[in-house]
Amino acid sequence: MILETRQQHWSDEAACEATALALARHPALRRACIELHGPLGAGKTTFARHLLRALGVTGRIKSPSYAIVEPHEVPATAETDKLDIWHFDFYRFGDPREWEDAGFRDLFASPGLKLVEWPEKASGLLPVPDLSLSLRPEGDDSRTAQWQACTPLGAALLNETLP
Image (cartoon, rainbow, N blue to C red; front, top):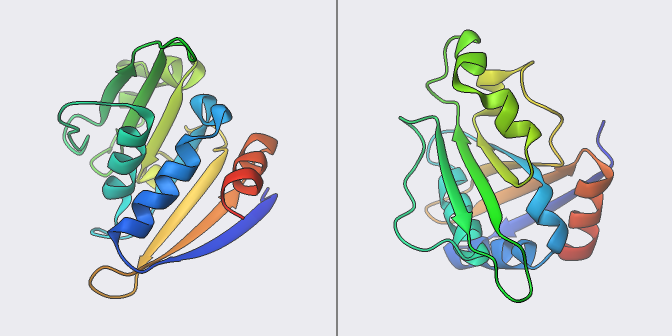
């Protein structure tokens, strides 16, 4: 069920980064699940990297294309608790048995932010996302970003960060 929809035009990567920064400021993001849709080269991993940086992830941020999942942890600060983040890429996911064997059910049930590239490859196994982002390239650097909120948490994130 789609509760809210927003569309953005990102003229360049700086616009993608600005959206990631705005979203990262919302405390509820720390418990969200965000699906990232789009063809190869659409900018899914780029957006994920900007969001991870905005949340405080330091060091190299690898694409989870081969590992399927890359875990990240943002240490606690005086203002916030520790944040666990899992960045999934199901592009090479081929066997639903991998889901159980890898413990993905437990990861999705645990607290923290989940970013999911190529969720359609794990169709029927994933929980309902809070937000779904579909990216469509419009030129060299330009993108259309279509946001859909699928839960009340997702609607709050859209309404409060992406007017």
